[in-house]
Amino acid sequence: MPLRDMHEPCGQCGFIYARVDTEGWGKNSARRVMCPVCGWTAYEEINWESGEPVVVTRSVAKGYGAFRLVPPGGYCGYNAFHEPASIEVLNTLMELLSNKEWKGYISLWNDDTQKATLVHGSPQSKFDLLKRKLSEE
Image (cartoon, rainbow, N blue to C red; front, side, top):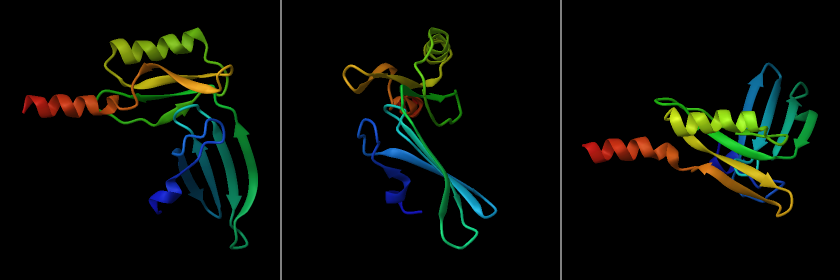
């Protein structure tokens, strides 16, 4: 898949690199576009029975923020809030990012400003471990 097909502009905040994830099974496939900034998500299921793509299901969900969690020594993807995040959820994420050595970030959508705000961490914190290893060598 060409790199240009792996992202497209967000339909909510306009971030130009909303991620495209795909999967396939039999004569069907699915495509999800999720903005790692605001959490906006578009999802479609496609049937290829006739040899041409036929969109069977399409939905678009407003984003209320996004987060990424990278456990120690592992990898995990981006996730979106499709409703305002509860205090319990935010506390759980903060605990992992602050006290359990997970890397990542949390952003929340603000309806008043029509922007997402980074509230914890950094999208680039996944590189912290690599920086630490390089400085020890």
